[in-house]
Image (cartoon, rainbow, N blue to C red):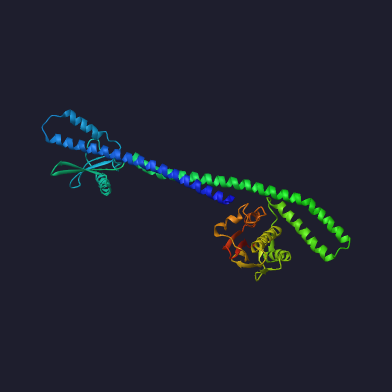
Amino acid sequence: MNIYDVRRFGVVVFLVVSLGLVAFFLYVSNNLVSDLAAQERERMQIWADATKQIADIGQSDASQGADIDFLFSIIERNHTIPVLLTDDEGNILLHRNFDLPDAIDSLAPYYISPANEAFLNAKLDNLRKRANVIHIIITPDNLQHLYYDDSKLLRRLSYYPYIQLFVMLAFILVVYFAVNSTRRAEQNKVWVGLSKETAHQLGTPISSLMAWMELLQSMGVDPDTVREMNKDVNRLSTIASRFSKIGSRPKMENADVNSVIAGAASYMATRISSRITLTVTEASEPLEVKMCAPLFEWVMENLIKNAVDAMEGSGSITIEIRQEGHKAHITVTDTGKGIPRKNHKTVFNPGYTTKKRGWGLGLTLAKRIIEQYHMGRIFVSRSEPGAGTTFTIDLPLAK
């Protein structure tokens, strides 16, 4: 299991644990809401029983003043749960704890204004659609119905699980992106430091090689051999210069992408196996792109070298350039061993490599150069094991 499989496993574990915690808190919150709803149901049952007993006392001649006071106190102590008491024909007999449009007249507390009546009838229609009703049998011929709504506290608590879910998901996302941003910032520092140190370390041997080239030329060594060797030394110097520019904003100039790619391909063509064919199909007209030509050449050379390594000695590499809208569209296709679909994005991660030798930074730096410096895109557009790979680069055309 490589580092990216471990990281992917860690992300899965983090998400599973996070979702488990969310589910647990939702379960607890829902239980709390259910318990409170059950308690309100019990209170309304007591309220209904008190109403029936008051009616029973009213129909008897017994003097039970203390009992009536106690029963009325049960009804009067309900200051939170909205209730509607109706007869069997739907006439409203009593209402409590509703926010009515018209204030209740203290001199006529049982009078219901037309606006309040319309409001209460609308509430009654809504409450009839729910199970919050208790039927009170005053006598076999006299039925009353107690409808009640959720208290404000219960309604607020019913929203709490969703608020809690939103807050926890937001917290998880913030933590995830914060960790990712920190990790990327650390990686950027490492890459920049490594690149600049590499350029610094290459400086001295390159200077020595240039001096040796001058010596070989003065000794009369075959000019063609010296010329080819000099190309490689100059290329090595260019590579060191590219490394030194990573981490700082390179100089961007308009250049024809056809010419830049053709130059990089021409250089690589003489340095790969003769059993590998390298073909470049240029666009029908020049495509001006604002770019840093040395860095972009390095990207193309890296893609070509990766394609050569994937083919293990023989095959073909095809580079196609064309215009698509306001973009230069570049594809690099090889006939190599291909990349599994699950790794199409992973190949650009630092440290990812299938080679026994190498640091796995080539495609990472290529992505950084294309996307951060050239404001373009680079991605694997097609690849299957055994069927080759196509890398695609999209670059905005110069205005």
